[in-house]
Image (cartoon, rainbow, N blue to C red; front, side, top):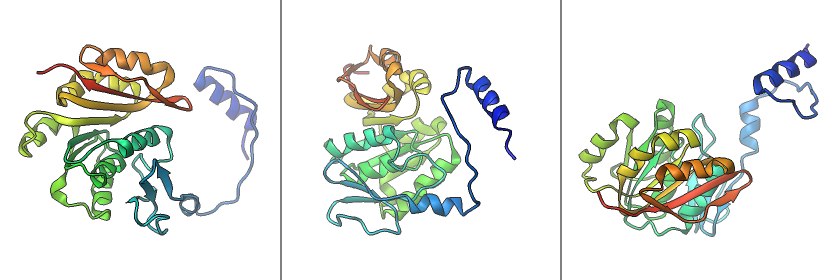
Length: 241
């Protein structure tokens, strides 16, 4: 039996603020993973990009369809920040570009970029499960292995050198969180080729100025794009090395 009042008091203490009205409901035990999968439907981003679970037929077989099942790594398209990045990729001209997906999670952004015309993508994450999920999802979408580089953040520069990316990437996309985006500013800027684009999300609206200020000496930003309380920042590197 749940100590409802005690649980609410503990939660309010952890959050350090009063809680909104709430209620408790006992649910019958079930296969929660299967229940979650049953609610996952194909999602459309822009005009030509779909994210589809493997057990369903794509609604538009002629569109750009990413086969992606929910898993342990972040990124299925359901979160506002992932959707913001997918919508940007769908509208961008990625043909032939070499891209880095910093904080790749499931690999959804990297796979989208490759299916939309990018030449190569370096997928970076500090979570081994994310790197494994990215590798599996790349294979599941029949993407040639020589178009994908996967590594830990400590190995970014070495991996880029080994794959002859010598003058920086033509697009850096990072869907992480505001605090790491701020601390990573020098690194992400250094990975950009001159006049190349930077796309960032995982940022709450009230954090946008702090994030953009960390990059303002090297990046010219366009007006932000917002979905609910989350925003996407897009800019272009303005200086050479």
